[in-house]
Amino acid sequence: MAQPAKHNRSWSPQDIAFLKLHYRKGTLHRDIAKGLKRTLNAVESKATELGLVSKRRKK
Image 1 (cartoon, rainbow, N blue to C red):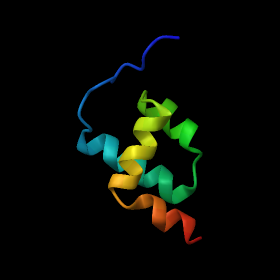
Image 2 (cartoon, rainbow, N blue to C red):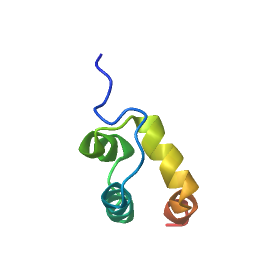
Image 3 (cartoon, rainbow, N blue to C red):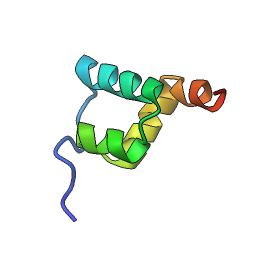
Image 4 (cartoon, helix red, strand yellow):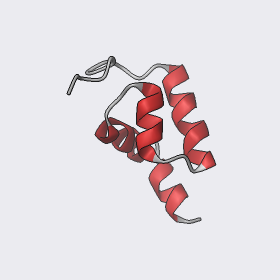
C-alpha cells in the first residue's frame, strides 16, 4: 500500500480547518483521513492534540 501524499508533513491551517469542520459534522475518521491524504493515526493524533476527541465523545 502506498504512503499518503503528506506523510511526515506539517499540518497547514487549511488541514486543521478541514479536520475541525468534519469532526464537528461527525464524519468518520477514515473519511477525514482520506480527504486529507493522511493516515488514520495522524488524524486521530491531531484530533486528540486539538482537544476534539473529548468534545466528540460528549455528544
